[in-house]
Image 1 (cartoon, rainbow, N blue to C red):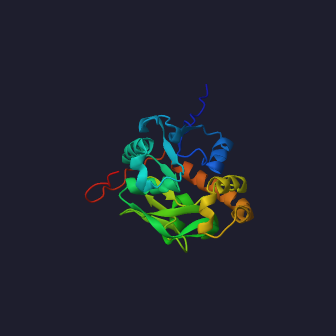
Image 2 (cartoon, rainbow, N blue to C red):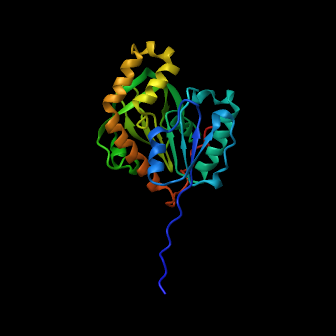
Image 3 (cartoon, one colour):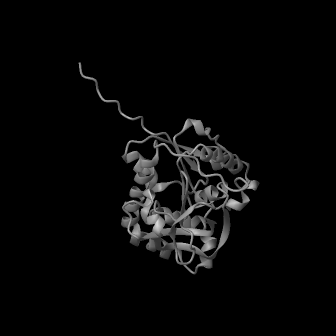
Length: 256
């Protein structure tokens, strides 16, 4: 009698959507391609977030809300509380844009206004730490990414800056099981066109038209799509691995 080898259980991925207009785009499509189930919680609509014990990893999406103003949004305060519990347990977490800023704050970092507002496609470069970090395995040292933000995280103490930009220097960080990326690889030109309609009042700050930012995204869309799949695969590789909680910060983590 032969015994079939046991297969590892598929990871349970939780996606926290913080804005009706901003999902996880190509990251979600990659999860579907790989046959990995995931649950999207519409945090912005008040949907309850399952506690950390109910899932193996989390992806935290974006929102126009400042990570410094979550006190004005009870649903984001609850999200922060549950995420902090997950980080204390060493759960893998991937934060995108606002999601990266929220993770940074929970780990003792801060969020500050950028020297300039970034809207459109531009180059991001890996730091020495980023080149050796598993999340960017297989990435070129410099690659295109889409940006839409006026604030960015400061890397928490004991964290590592993984990626940098020329105008906004902090573009990626890791601390323990948490990874944050300020940029977007997961968007398509079609989604950018929707953002351009939704946030049209922000475009004059960078002197760009709706057509231009969509064109910038479209020009780099094939490479960004390839890198989005690679980043998501790299993140999934960390799910299920034994990970230790981050090293405690002096004086404890920042209070939210």
